[in-house]
Amino acid sequence: MIGNGSTRLLSRNFAVDNMATVDVALKHGAYEQFKRAVKMKPDEVTEIVKASGLRGHGGAGFSAGTKWGFIPKDKFPRYVTVNGDESEPGTCKDRLIFERDPHLMIEGALICAYAVQAERIYIYIRGEYFYPTRIVAEAVQQAYAKGFAGKNILNSGWSCSIHMHNGAGAYICGEETGLIESLEGKTGWPRLKPPFYPAAIGLWGQPTIVNNVETLAFVPRVLEIGAEKFAAMGSPKNGGTALYSLSGNISKPGVYELPMGTPLMDLLNKFGGGIPNGRKLKAVIPGGSSSHILTAEECENLPLDFESVAARGSMLGSAAVMVIDDSVSIPKLMHWMVRFYAHESCGQCTPCREGCDWLLRLSKKFLDGTARKSDIDDMWELADNIDGKTICALGAAVAWPTKSYLVKFRHEFEAVCKN
Amino acid sequence: MPISESLKKKAEEIVFRYPEDKRASALIPLLFEVQRELGWITPEAEEWVVETLGVTPVRVREVITFYSMMRAEPHGKFIIQFCENISCCLTGGEELQHHLEHKLGIHPGETTKDGLFTLKCVECLGGCSWGPMMLVNEDQYFQLTKERVDQVIDGLRSGTPVKADHPTPLLGNVAGEKV
Image 1: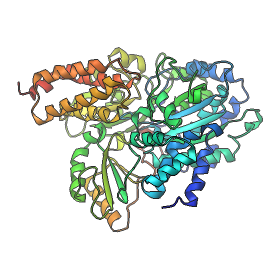
Image 2 (image 1 turned 45 degrees about the vertical axis):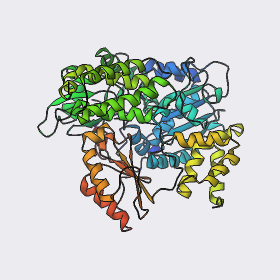
Image 3 (image 1 turned 180 degrees about the vertical axis):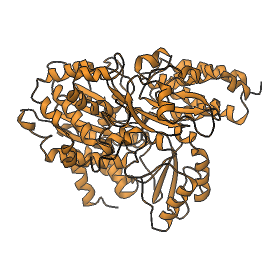
Image 4 (image 1 turned 90 degrees about the vertical axis):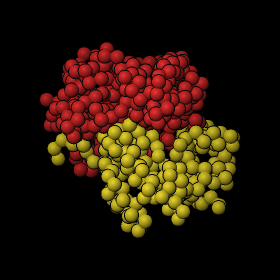
């Protein structure tokens, strides 16, 4: 069974000593799938990934193979960018891929680059990941030394280079067009849509695939076990497994690789060891801080896949599950949450730039006892004025949780109001 | 302070990562390297970056002021980035932050009088399952307690730093069995 610790798919070599060293990685089958891929037609590779049901693990959950298929037929050069900005609060799984099995991610990026016939790969890693960056940079050098990158790779006639690029502290650069702007040496202001995907117009105006680290790390495994088996592992339309980042008020926090569609309460109780200190579950943030909060009742019978969590009115996002026990005040949680967005709003769109700051000011009133009941409605309206009125999804990312905290836990906000 | 030969060499290496006519893409990595070597981005270094990449001064200014890790003024020898996001707060981060402030005798954004420490309270550092966490310069420290924070600070004060959490410990079922 996948997920019990013995047959993990992506993370199965995380505990291997020196797995970041290419010779060790090669002994564990690294680059074998890449060698197979370059013998196929590029489109064949894309079709396999499409059929596997592999979804984007960065947050949006878009079909990886479909994204690759958006590359225009006759526009060159093309690029692949690994999105390692990992900065959605609660998310801490790409860090482990970088540190524990970087060659798996590099192999996945190479397979992707071959499938779309890209000539360059950029590995974009957030600036705060100093140690992970060092490990990945070293791994890239070793991949070159073994002939997996550079000119005429494995005598396929195809050439591709791999380059490192660090961010410097900006949540917005996880948004794929913000990331591209940052790669071009600019502030990370997301681009206007359409085009909806940088596959057509991306880095330096050229076709570009931007995929999350985990998504790309799954690609060699898809080829290894085959699309059909991968698809069968998860739930309908959600292929394979996922790395769930479990944090907050939980006995055994950590990263859990489990099949897509694993019930939330299994993750919390069977794997996470339940709520510590004799406390009770109050709420769960299921997919990073941008997702709607779920009450304890809403957590029951909930399979953790994109469609099921969406049907419950939230989103799986980056599968970052934050657990909140009954000692935590939701107005306080609100303050921590909006403080993040107020700090990280890039300032491009007025509703988000101004709105986040006002949300932060109002959230403070619920902590110092100066809030009135009208502030609850003002916060809801502010959030509503951001929702859907910005260039990128970060607007919704603050509006959705704000509204959900206010609606589902209104009584907690009212309880601390003066009148 | 003149730009060192090592920094010039590093600049060449960074610019080489991008197509010849896309030198401007090197801006963020190059500024990062400047502050790694000089401690902060001095006005002279900023000018040098403008010349090296052939970009406008305002473009460089824009980038420096946009990204929170860019330092346009001198900082302490050790820059502490302490996470104040949800997961770390849920696991006692706020109380620990107050402990750290008290221990250093400074508020967030300030530098100790001896020039040793600058404290920054920052948003999510991607260590949520290992919270509370902090970065000291390039070193990551997880699962912080008051005792651990004291050890880290005392170690840096006495010149005998405690070992950072490199690599990140495996928590959760990804730890699996040791192979």
